[in-house]
Image 1 (tube, one colour):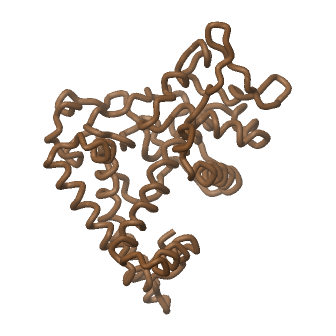
Image 2 (cartoon, helix red, strand yellow; image 1 turned 60 degrees about the horizontal axis):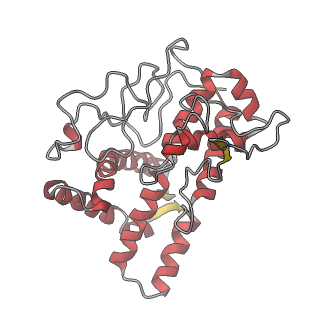
Image 3 (cartoon, rainbow, N blue to C red; image 1 turned 180 degrees about the vertical axis):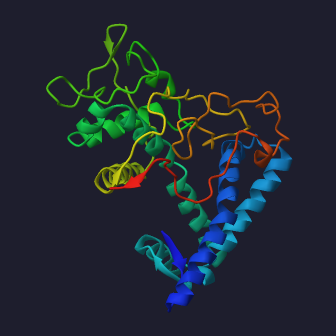
Length: 307
């Protein structure tokens, strides 16, 4: 999306890759930390100490995506280039454009990885679902979204209502399919049809405008995994861990240690030590023992091998 360090020769290419790895090593932990602050930051319920830290992190990213630096990078996406050009033509200041770049990064990278991880995990645990996905990818992606809705919206109540969705905490790839394979739209509560039976992207006028992009991104991710890789769980008999998140203040997406050994954004049953609680707002996210930053920006799937 934001390209990579420019290089002209093979030697420079190796140096450029080292530079990008080093930059990722610096920015990724900062990104994860900012995610933990975000809900409280936007709701203005964050402590003054964490607010100061969140502002520091934003400045780090504003500098990383400064226009001068982006102009010297290769393979910057057309979307980013045209966004910069449009904002510049509209007279928007460079500092504001740099803030917009961070907003683009946060919106694109903080929402899709969690459902992508859980979708892939459930597919590996259910061969029937894996096969059905090849025929009904769109329906399965919708079920993944129901399991991990945005924390800023209230649909979790209906998503986990057993009267609306029987056995709501179990992944059912055909939950939104009729027996004949058509889209299922009829869900009931107390004998009455439920109009909004699933809303992982919110609803009404403020419904997430990036939902179409995110859904297509999930589809492409899954299909590329199916086409280019053979993958399996290291411990196929291991029970899928609880969906409970660590209780570090303001957590949006946690990085857990997972006994299944499948990458990041996977929870551990042991997570939530008594020393890390929601009321401990003075605790920095990087000191919370539940958080383990992955070594690279991409999810790592243990046991993954090229097909």
